[in-house]
Amino acid sequence: MQDFEDFVALRSQALLRTAYLLCGGDRGAAEDILQDVLMSMYGKWRRIRTSPEAYARAALANAAANRWRRRSRKPEAPLELGAVPTARGHEQQVVDADSVVRALAQLPKQMRAVLVLRFFDDLSEAETARALGCGIGTVKSQTSRGLSRMRELMGEQVLTWN
Amino acid sequence: MELKQAMEAATSELDVRPGFVGDVMAGGRRRHTRKLVTVTAVVALLAGVTTGVVLTRSTERSADPRLTAATTGPLAGDSEFIATASHLWSEAQKDEPWKRDEPVTEVSSKPNVFWTGQTPTGPAALVAQEVWVRTSEHPATLVGLVADGKVVNREIVLSEARDREAGLYRFGPVGDQYVVLTLGKTVSWSQNPKRGPDNRLTRTWASAPHDEDGVVFTVVPPEERPVFVRGDSVPQSDDFTQPTILTGDLQPDRPFVPHPGLGWEGQFCATAFPEQKNSWPGLKLQAVQHELQKRALLDYIVSWEATTDWSVCAWLPDGRYALMFESLGELYGALYQPDGTFSAPVVGGKAVKGEPAVLSLPDGQGTIVADANALVGPQEREHAWLAPSGTKEVTVRQKGVPKVIQLP
Image 1 (cartoon, rainbow over the protein chains, first blue to last red):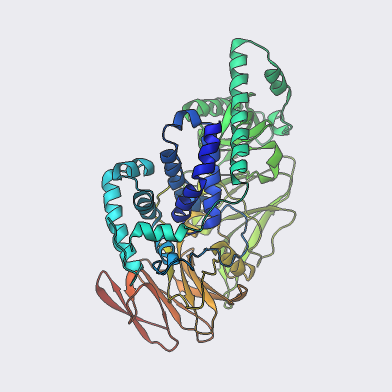
Image 2: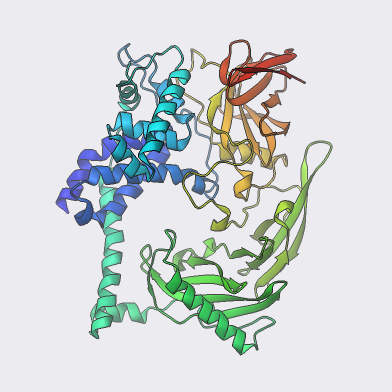
């Protein structure tokens, strides 16, 4: 299982970033679902080793979508101040790194997942559809509406996309 | 800036915590080992080979007395019904694959009907059966209710977490019948909370102490908001902080389900982000709800319909921070000091689908007007706007159509 450990060591950071965006900026939830997804991959490694990254991203998207279902069953959480980390202090080209996370958090979960997988993880429409268990048409429409919403939400911080 | 670039900038400082890789490997190995042990045991059993693993596993039995207890309840002498219930229980395992939250790898004993009763829609039986699950090194108990000619629901009770058993089963044509296990405690239930002139809620509780059957049966229509509590005593009428009994069937069963109530989804902000702030307060909605429940202003949240997935935040003129949300068709809010301490609760009016949500804040801090996907107020702010104190009306543009809202 050395190759699985290598995968975890090498790819956890990137996957955490995907999970963070999928969770709308909830760092704790992102770590929780990532750890759960990776642990579940351990026993399936032989089957998924050819494309573990795709498997992990699909599993993260579904785990993030299901997250709110379990929320009401969890014990009371304490108040957390500053739960959303900032990336301020970077170069000035980053107008406001928080704002993209805040905007993503305002999107419906499926729309958010589509944008994260398509634009952050560079998945194709077909790969995104497979990961989310929906049709390519849904991915297209969610992408279109999601980008429009993001442009509105980001206000003066003009976003472009390829 | 490109969207991808913005996302990368927003996550550029994120990295996993120290020890994360080790935790994943240890956890994954533990889960996998458990699975291998089970597979080995099953294969060995099939081959008739007695291995050390099998001997070890087969000698450990669950200590749950329900697995062997004699049947109790009004129909305890009805052997035909008990046989029918056992048959339905076993058939359900053949017909339905285990669900995601049922990590059963092996069923290791015959089902035992430990309680029977008569309900308005026919006889019912509680069944227990020993199982092995991926998530535990010890045998667990599969407990469930057979009623209305089928297995209503079942629950896996881990031997190391028996205090977390829900022991609550809802059934009947309209879901108004409940069988609740007392589990050695007093089970209390309540319906129809009342709101007094001071906005505080009260509930009247009925209770059933632990008896020899250990089972409570009651009928409460869902619209009367039944709440069940298991504890050492009966809750006070104004106590909305007791841990309630929740079951999985009160959750939706698909990832993308439209939300109830106003149907909105997202975290909106009614004001701009203050220049001097470099992060959100990060309030957990559950914690905010708990503050209101402590003050008997918000009811118990025990059902899917009680929860929504939207909130509106606002930085207030006096430096405080407000959060507005919806629960059980009503609007609520809470004010917090900049250091995160709770400041004041707000109880709003009804949330009406298709109409903007309006919440007046105390101490002259203004009024939050929210309408998802609409442009609100003179600045045409997306989703929500904090109208300054004294504002009499606000224009809300939904899909370009202006609508003037009168403020209280």
